[in-house]
Image 1 (cartoon, rainbow, N blue to C red):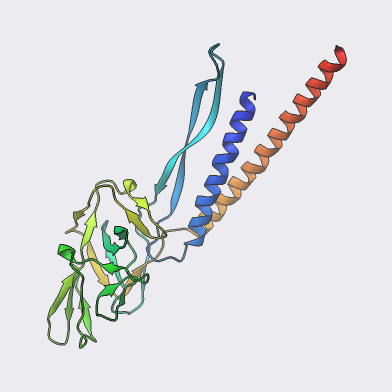
Image 2 (tube, rainbow, N blue to C red):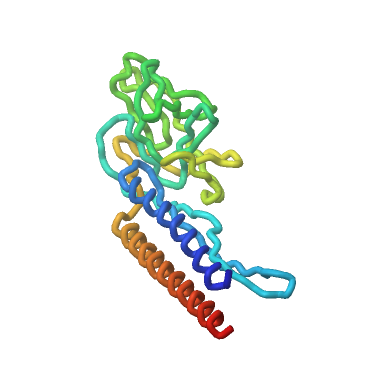
Length: 242
């Protein structure tokens, strides 16, 4: 297999992976707190054999996350909260702690504040934030403290964590992340009540990227076909000359 074929095949492979990433971004354009991702590519050179012949291909190194804050939209719901800053909410799941920017929380039957999936939202100290039966009107303060307007009693405080390098967070489902090392409590971020952070996906940009990748796939496929035809012609010509 010649170098052109190696490069073309690797380009097609990375292009299809890129299309998957873009398609996932588009599918989550309306997902609360979702952050768009993109792929990082790098040319890779190597020796084909001991004679020193060289080859190359396109290598996808990783995906990066766009950590820019999404736009805020007002909902008026008491348990819709958004983070102004770089922090993440902590969530207790059966597989361990996960982090999210999505603050569209609900109230469980036992009063605990939960995610739509039923995961417990973590308060400072790792404790659940639990509302009482009489808490029909609550306030979430800028520092994340939750109080009841009935008796002005404190029900807990959202644990908000920050990470020195958010790019090291790994995706776990749509909108959730895992961390190899625990985050640090974030005292700088502020919590807004009655609003949600929208996805930072820009659908028009993603659709444009998708079309560019599709054109690349088409042109690369044509190149591979042309190279194949040329090889067949060369073999046929050599065979006739013998």
